[in-house]
Image (cartoon, rainbow, N blue to C red; front, side, top):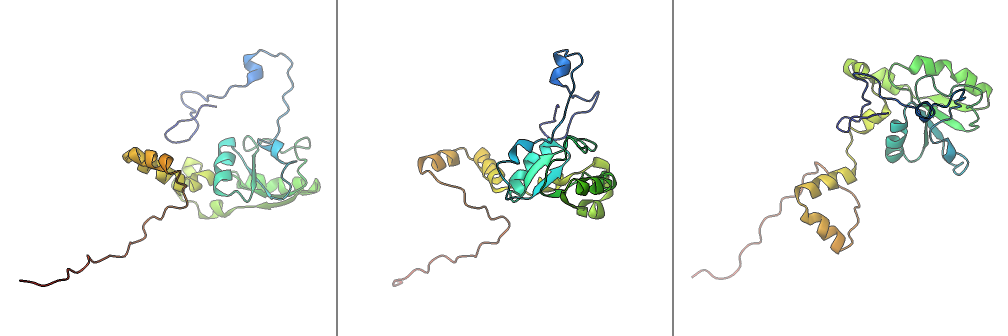
Length: 196
């Protein structure tokens, strides 16, 4: 898939830039069996609930912002909702893209029949603006509106590259960045002494 590095959105014009390796290698009769993106993480981490999104990009971004979930992706609105793929016997929260909520809601019965404890996060569908619907927002688009501490630090380093040298020299660690918090005004110290 080809993504625009400025917007993070897929490039679909003048055509959809999606290529499959088996197509490039001209594998005739190849039987593609899709799995969830990130599915390989499930056996090693059984403690966190699973969060299911459509796009792989969204799973990666969301894993940074909400690490209390194990993020996997279906590869699209219709992807992986079949008997071969639904082997996740865990607590799963569905995070559909705007416009796909009804379709994903219709899959909950199927998922429950396979022993999956499933819930639907439909907050985006209920609260989205018309423009967000038109743009086809997903949970990652909302998350990216919140700038993480690391992004703020990188912007500061871009403005003053000496900051990077300072961080490396003293082995400084980023703890947090406070934005928009007014700093208390400190009056200059009063001069003491005699006036002649």
